[in-house]
Image (cartoon, rainbow, N blue to C red; front, side):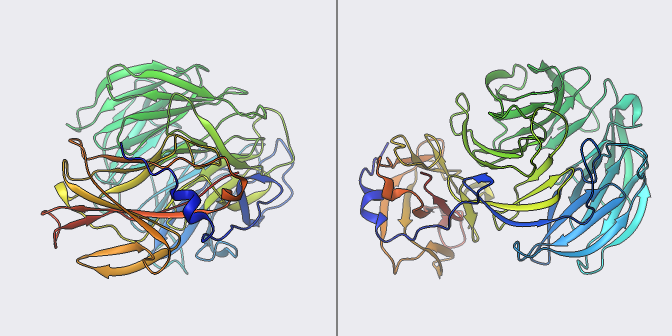
Length: 483
């Protein structure tokens, strides 16, 4: 494994310092907070889930609220602009109100415990329109984008399980089948599997969906809190995370490489005692809401040893009750995170360090897949001597070049876009991918205070005859070093 011991020290003086962190957050910056429906005091809630979409290059937030769904244009995340409100079933008769969202193409799908699912047409983001309602009451809704299937979970679906729909026509879903052996609170249908959170049974179940409509149970695993709220997996279907929603419940990490026998690796609980809620995985980072403790970003580059990167508290409430931050959505291209707080509305925050951001276009090569830049050895932090820059999904046993620089760039050359500014200080490391198409560069971060808030930019380029002009390239990779 190549090592570049002094790279960070030699580059540090040329790298700008990031803005200060907001007082309510750790390694997070507040960009916006919008309270369209004020006045909710615990335990009453005016907001529940949150989702994000990109339509015509514009970043949109889908924000379910007590009486309907808000749509915001967040292309300028410091100034979200409301573009529409779609009324939905339900009202003020319950202290809590649950409504969730998901999407396919330019359509958003909204679930509710009080009525059928809704379809919102966002082809024109300035004029969101309700297309129709369909199906049953559902607690959550999940979308298998690759297979164009929607899973409606819980509610009045058969046995509280799932009803599955075809989205070939996204404005008119057609029922394909049902799954109903136990109550399914939420699920993740992805890459030939469906990961079910069976909250009442206290477990997560893995289904093989590759021969759909045949659904084959591969494993059923009881989670520590026995109240499994949701489950998510990494991009390689190797690591899974679950959330137990019992009071003070934690996040649990599993190795699901062998889907017949998931292996528990670690648990992580809120330092403030909050109840972990919806967990998402992006790269090597778990992003999740934790009710009265707010939002957390946790490093899982070593899945057996989760490490807190940062977080943001959206509420003055404390304890382990079901109040405060309900949802967190981390997948927008800009790198911001959308948060929904049951009492205080819609929030937009941005990690200031530790959480990498991928930018620009990649160029595919081997097997039609583009290389990916990530990291290992723990998140970027002063004194992190095990830090690595990692490239994956390369052509096996092939020459590669890794660029590490002080500024982002966007230069077209030889069929790729170079995302590191070669007019600023940079390093070029040449090596070869291993037999599995991976490469790791050790980049120890010295225990030197002046390195805090410095930002690195990186990209990997691989020789690859399958690429249009013989080169495959990753997106740009940007990360700021935490104190």
